Image 1 (cartoon, rainbow, N blue to C red):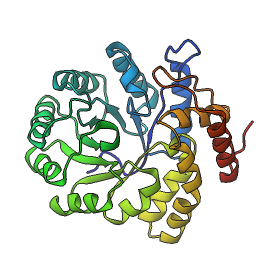
Image 2: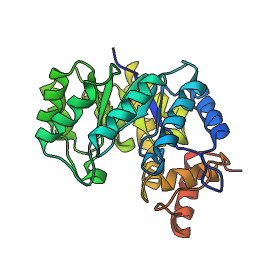
Image 3: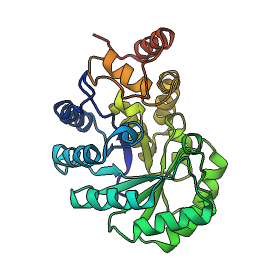
Length: 296
């Protein structure tokens, strides 16, 4: 059984102006997401600025998300690292603190061969009982988790159950599903390709878009699963200008700006991320308005 089916939000980590984590706001956001139909909370991922959280903050944020969610939906913790030992430590701590699953990005910068990736993920899987979703986003990591490697890990490690697919390459995603006999729990990591990936057997999406429009992303998935393809197509199509704006700069710069424009007060970004240009802010505001989001 999949960790979740439908729309999982890759939730932002809200911060005060001094860049300390705003836990009160995190609880508020989680409650809003669940009220709007979100099917899973993905905490401390790319969108959650995990790379600029300290080890202590990383654990505390995951623990807080578990506490705030109160078992209403699964909490999936981002525990990836380019150091296998560190990734194991994050995984063990997330399991101890009550996470329901793990999202583990490929090693970045130092990369790894495909054999190295198999060793990396196998060592992590051997140190936790939690189900693991592999995360492939070569545009950010410089490291592509190939279909054959995914299939090997899926077949050899019982708790490696899924893949967040963010290559934008439908042929690669299809090959991955072919090599895993359609049994892999595939999740779209591209908000512009949710419906195409659902059509080849994906279980849902791990979404940036859900931070600003959780109800619509849930409804897209729900419509597809209920056989209402026309509604799913409409929801995917109508969102494309907003999705483009949400990725007009390095994630999560645009989505945090969008949420602040919406009055959600998620605060600043941590360096080296910086604010968007005025031109991109204007584009974002226009996209939000055109999508039907009422701004304060």
